[in-house]
Image (cartoon, rainbow, N blue to C red; front, side, top):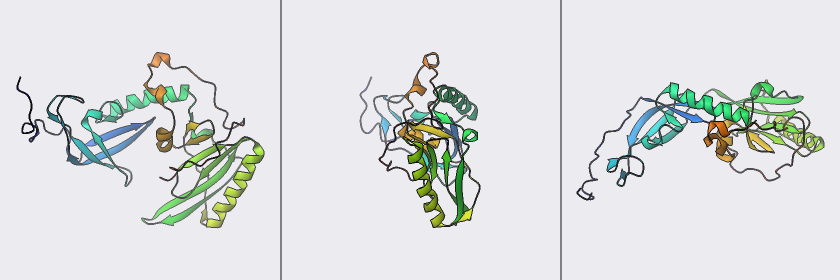
Length: 244
């Protein structure tokens, strides 16, 4: 077999698998994000077959999210783990992930978040969209916090007194910023640590989800983390990557 040279790699040996307008689905924890291909590019040839067939071009794609202005990029060699061209296959992965996440008690569904007191406000932003900010006391030690342009969090404090103090300060802060009073609107919250929960986007990057890659028969159910009822040690330092 002739050894490959730089001249052999000058022209692609394979055409891109997807084209502009094709549907691509990303699975993030147990949520599907729907994208459309907007562009194709490549900066690398898989010379030694590290990701696929030796000598073939590794195509990558610019993506536009169907329900927002968010953009993303993925490569063909990433298909089948979290990227899918089939909605059915993406849903099958979501079902597997959801079963594991719920068995590990690593999600609090929105319907289970019942505040004892709360404040919520909306404010107009460019594009005729409303920006929501809100705070709520949850159970004995939890506080739900959502600042403008930031991810939502549930922070778990070491005592009810500490949670009350934080919630009182947060509620006054949000009220001072102004806005139109609104309905408190929680979302599914995923475990980042014993003292912090957040939306799926933030939690996926900062939490430990290694159990999602374990064989299904090795997953074990855990006791529910007591976000609502029992105090745990609070992480005092703020997470820097809190903004969207």
